[in-house]
Image (cartoon, rainbow, N blue to C red; front, side, top):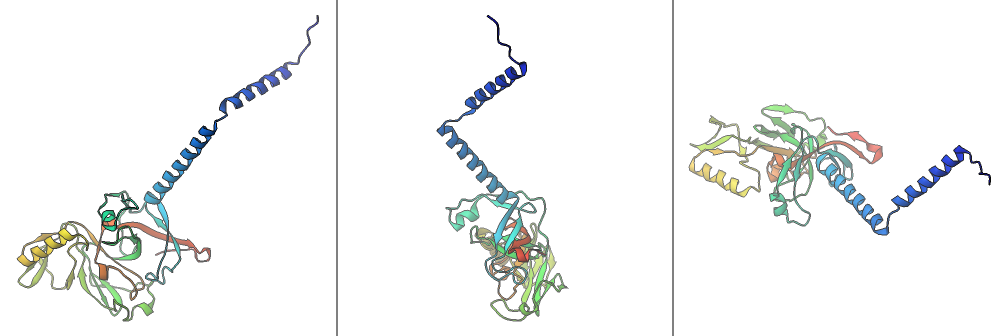
Length: 281
């Protein structure tokens, strides 16, 4: 009986096809495996999204007119968390006081600078976000006269401010008494009717925030020291923030200064609506 001759190329092709079929049969998943695969994919995506929003950037929508004309109600901003982030390790179901007392993790590469537009939080308001501009840095004396900001005696025109917002009106008016912004390590003492900061008599300071509002124990300790004439040492750097719509803004003029860890992101640009894409300065 004669053997049938087969082309080596045909044999190789059939062998490859058979191998491919076996491989396909091996990787076939059960329904349970498919479901588990989808669950793992979704969990990884959610974790990745949370990490990005917490540590890198987050889109934030403007609600209100306190930053007019720099930011408008409904604008969606790109907020960089990488610049000087402070991550609050709180849970959505916690109360405002519990959220504020939650551990915080500072992971940013830089520090806030004067006139940066930032997303921040206020004492007693939990994890509610506010967008404001940093006006006072630790150790500054800040005042507003005739609608213009003075920092350490230097007048700033602030070209981003609409002149209509400099005039008296609203709850904040057009003046703000010379206010000292404490820095960590400052020593403060009230003696003989005068205020002493780091041992220097400071009659130029009219208003002083000892610590961020909401830090009840520190506030009580400060006032007790002032009444007894003892020195008080400030524990944390503080920052004054204000809205660009100066006569329509709930900011440090009413809620007091905020601590460094309450500044959680740097506003870089507006990306929505598309017709108004712009950088924020």
